[in-house]
Length: 197
Ligand SMILES: Nc1nc2c([nH]c(=O)n2[C@H]2C[C@H](O)[C@@H](COP(=O)(O)OP(=O)(O)OP(=O)(O)O)O2)c(=O)[nH]1
Image 1 (cartoon, rainbow, N blue to C red):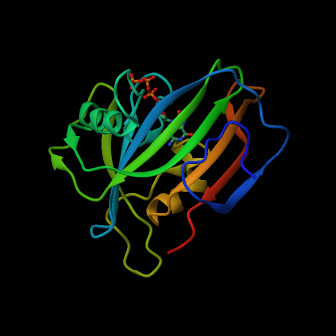
Image 2: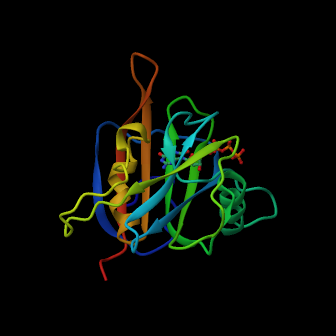
């Protein structure tokens, strides 16, 4: 059931799969984190515009590489502090394997989220933090905040964001291939999610 290379961290039921072709093979993986502040009471989520490096000009959670001697949870707290200037009691939200054609390693990404934070949200050299509205079908009024900018995020985020927002943990894998213009595009995915509570 699980795609190759994905290490199961929780019990999941199939949630979404699609795309075409075979899963690509890779030799190595590197461990990363990615953290979101999700405030359901205020109907908002904090994203950052990445200002440099991998994923530049995309909106994302705050994160980076897990360093030697630290756990992924510790790395997530450190990266949130470094990139957004805040601390939070982050909870594990899921794990995703991300492989992009031509890369010499796969990204093993642990996702985290928290509903509250301490400190003052501060722009860093890497990220410009901004609030976005959490979609809420039950409320007619529109938010003053912009909608989550999926067109300016990684292609796969639209698949698993509903799980993140619903607090359903997930495991998944996504493969990206280069198109004729040399852009990395989502070509195959598989996601499983914790059963609905
Ligand atoms: N939302 C989302 N995030 C992704 C995807 N793929 C992917 O690598 N990421 C995240 C994982 C990491 O948080 C970030 C890549 O790390 P980075 O570029 O900030 O890290 P870095 O090597 O510069 O390391 P560091 O200096 O921040 O420690 O992008 C994806 O498909 N969706």
